[in-house]
Image (cartoon, rainbow, N blue to C red; front, side):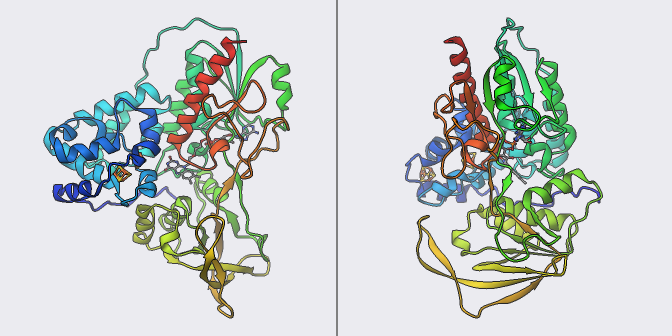
Length: 471
Ligand SMILES: Cc1cc2nc3c(=O)[nH]c(=O)nc-3n(C[C@H](O)[C@H](O)[C@H](O)COP(=O)(O)OP(=O)(O)OC[C@H]3O[C@@H](n4cnc5c(N)ncnc54)[C@H](O)[C@@H]3O)c2cc1C
Ligand code: SF4
Ligand code: SF4
């Protein structure tokens, strides 16, 4: 089926009153700024706490500076804000006011700055800057976005002899490959898929990031002398130790979190029960793939919402989402929940599957209702089944979206792993417990965001460069 258009519309007014009201609630604790990956990437240009403070004392400055255009709407700050302030919505209101006052100039300036720092800037902006959060006629936004690909001429660096291997070509791997190549090192990126780009290319739906945009970004990197070896899985086609034997003096592991967590219940192997990664990957790979008519998504995070909305957009007639805790405890951002509900996704809280039913293929799920009991290790009330509360939901496809873990079986045992299965690194240099091996992105901090993957990769660039210089 043809790739659908996103129909999400954010109904937010340009009410200054609302912005000022929210700014009054701010305690100036700085948690938003402290947790924001975009602040880490663009510290000279973006500081959410300062922007909120300036709303009350110097609104003109806020409107006439580019800061408000740097928010990537990840809602990380909102989850930590003691006042529950929704900064991305405030920035959207301020953007609306700014566009009326000074047009597009500040947005264009922000994009120029992002282009300098992010080597796959067109893809990054498509994924993180959500068209609908740029309050302009969408054809104007499209035209601005189209111009992002203009290639920049970079100063010729001296060629260095040291070879560096990057495992994985997602956002983290691409940043390390680009930035170290710029310093003159010889870079090879090993990728198990037939294409480069990681999750951006493999799973993020076409309507959010068209394949041709990420492909153009990758081609630009190839032209800078980075070698991509696709269809090459480290651990299968080449061992980790072979990389050292082949003369690579440093290795950056950026293999992401691609191992889906499964539900260990009856019927888990029935046809039609699939992981979130498989569902999204198949929709992206196979143009004519159609999702089931009656879909049940299991999970409560942003990707569960993404999957549920995507299923509706691709033509599923009934999409139900089961979450085992309450709405207040749901990890997905409020806006993602709102969007899924607007799309017609039915969310059943405090419910979980007991078993999947069907001959060979799933046709029903037996579920039970849950209630919240005492607080568990996560600090949240633990959901426990209610006796005799079983109920049936019909389903011809079930998508498990309860989390992903890094696949680390290919790593040498000297590399230490934490209890969540992620690689332990020195947070400043991103070096692992095995000298010369560095890691970043989702393989280090579990499934996170593109911006966080870039931040960790930027730290690794400094770590690897210093390591090689001091050898
Ligand atoms: C459906 C979906 C929607 C998302 N939406 C957003 C969003 O809107 N905004 C946002 O910021 N983030 C989003 N994310 C998260 C984001 O895509 C990830 O955080 C990011 O891609 C992580 O980058 P990475 O480089 O660490 O790993 P990845 O992008 O996962 O790349 C890792 C690469 O390593 C390769 N690899 C793995 N093992 C090996 C091996 N042994 N040998 C060779 N290659 C290997 C993999 O094939 C893969 O290509 C989304 C994720 C999904 C699944
Ligand atoms: S986290 Fe909330 S209260 Fe604290 S500075 Fe940011 S917006 Fe204000
Ligand atoms: S939503 Fe994300 S990018 Fe925007 S200010 Fe909050 S943490 Fe930063």
